[in-house]
Image (cartoon, rainbow, N blue to C red):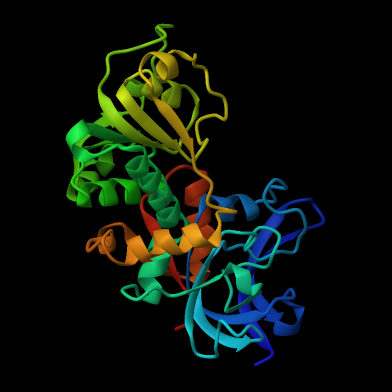
Length: 331
């Protein structure tokens, strides 16, 4: 097969970015040791930004977004991967400036590829995707810092987004009392079914008092939003608490002081999933496939076809998406 179906984003004569499902040639894919037939992908906010011409994500167009892929090896010049092997690829440059997984085929460097962990199906791996991997990194950082269920509540911001909703579910599975922060009251029932014991509004986490410290409430946090909400949480931690920070949906700024750190011994743990070393990737994916494996993934995902992706990306850009969109590429 020399041609395959893909979502392609192009810039037209009016400087607008348009999305079409079209045929591409395999020989036009970038260089790499592993050619993968994509069975599933999943939608991320970076895909939405790439689809509207955001040059901070994707520099050159036409382009196929899709930062997550699971599928089967078709060709490999690397001894670590064989034809027919089930694999997954998340982050690195896939879908950003390298042709992405909203397509039937990708070709990538072997160092980006992970053998599908035992215990996960190709579909389950993509319900998790970069969001689940990032949630896993956050939780791993909190656990290794010493945050544990007996030390008190943990709070998760952006709890209806991909990282947030999976963090809620995994933390609940591990026995934590989880507080979920959301601006979507209609999502409360779902978050409770996933294990959240308390739902709070974004407004309640936006302290504007100017006080350098607040009453200690939380043992730890997963923060996906940044800005003043992150600052408020830092001021509200128990002694020895920590926040794993992985996002900036609200703001990249952090209007706080050193007091949470020098008076309560708190920590701000930075989380990066894009360039995370492979040894750590394998560790986290093993947890996600075994002791952290969720049995309620069906609650947070819905399957769509490639043709439905443009409309879902629009919902993400409007802040109306809930849960994970699992994109079935191969019928």
